[in-house]
Image (tube, rainbow, N blue to C red; front, side, top):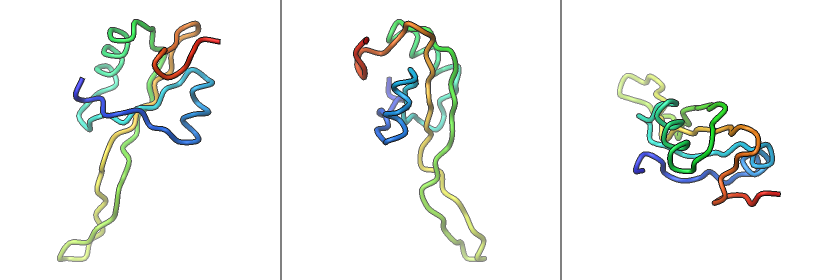
Length: 93
């Protein structure tokens, strides 16, 4: 899928893996339902919920000196139901 960019690897995302939550960087146009359908079909898992946020990259100014915030990417945290996991990122314990 070209709308799924990559997995986000940070301290928080690694802690979320222990709670069966996976963090992905996705295309700005991708919706929660589209992400849920794709994850469930591709990895054969059941999604419990998805949180999404638009991440800003920098602030800029235009000619009239108004502050403008640029959105660079969208981040989604996918929470799976119990007893499901994505084997690509975490082995079953």
